[in-house]
Image 1 (cartoon, rainbow, N blue to C red):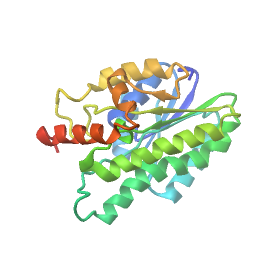
Image 2 (image 1 turned 90 degrees about the vertical axis):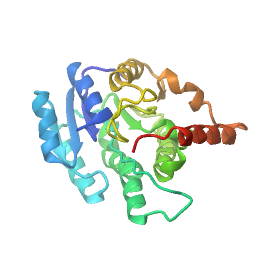
Image 3 (image 1 turned 135 degrees about the horizontal axis):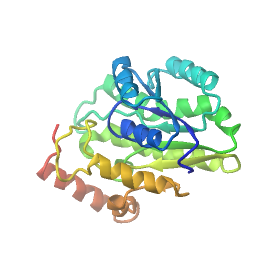
Image 4 (image 1 turned 30 degrees about the horizontal axis):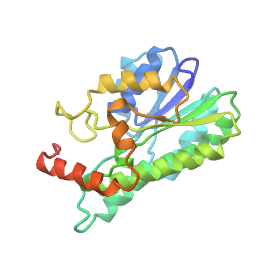
Length: 252
């Protein structure tokens, strides 16, 4: 994608990867609008980045999405980039009883949220000379983390949806790119300085550089072997990955 002269809406833009992406695009002179549920955090980010704007909405709620989309189209008619970044990552136990309320919230936020928001904005995006939809999935879309089974499934679902959406938009002005982060040291899990987690600034630097190209999937080099996972050796890789994390657990 072209990294400048855009009007960009980023969901989950108040912390972690979402905020870092918003600030990186903002520093390049783009018009950036962040979306999130908590007005105090939205105000904190926009105050720290003069010229950035925000919309308060809940990506897990269809009515809120539709209202936000209508506001965005009316207020920012030049919108040409949507970054579906918002996500939640509760831990669970697929060997026991799964909390239905929590699972529904994960799927509403991580999977249905991007689908619904893309649907609400796609006709507007198709009217632009050039437009991009960016889905933030996860390396766990390729190699599930067993202790976040529902989260991993939600990201695998979004990866699948992105591929279908990309194909269906192939003859339009809209391109679909996917970011699939590794474990990045943010508060999505627990910001801890764990050496296994990629520093946020390093992740953003590499990701922004790769977004400037035409790659359909924008993945940092460290996860390329895991992206190559599907195939006859998939089960052994997934089992080995999870056994290593059982031996040295992720901070919770």
